[in-house]
Image (cartoon, rainbow, N blue to C red; front, side, top):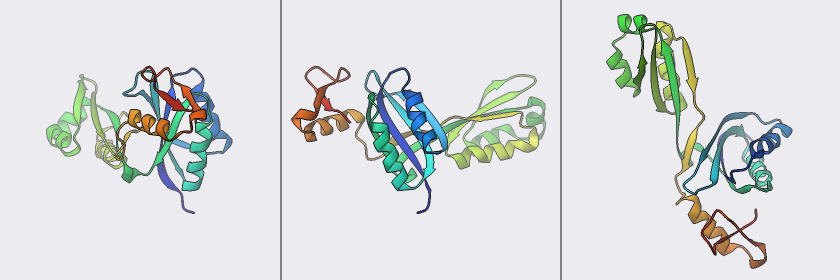
Length: 196
């Protein structure tokens, strides 16, 4: 089987040590994580891990099953690039003298959808968001002008077909057998979610 890029989205309770436990799942299987982002969600006290890896679908499916066995994990999903709306942010630091003297800054900013966020005598910092190819394109355009520093954020992603995790929790509670239901303090009173 060929490896492909997959984005794993993990919904969790916000507990200390969970990141380490999830990282161990990947390191035990010798799987390299290309990108990792954690953030709050639309539900108070529920957090989202967005993890990008290059693996086969079978391996990714097994990883999600292992991740869901963690006590503080509510649910894990995996998706291909086509099933997501995603972006990465990048920052570029270049010498101000070089960029002003040799490049029409406005044209360059428009072409790559970038904007200047810091302009000083010694350097200028540009920011842009987009897919990896777009952020790499601006980096290549700036390299001849003395690119001092470059940094790209982890991927942030939303599943296209999702109506929100709160709706998925309702679906799971309706389909779970009654003996698997447990009380969840992150939902409204009288709502329950089954354990993963």
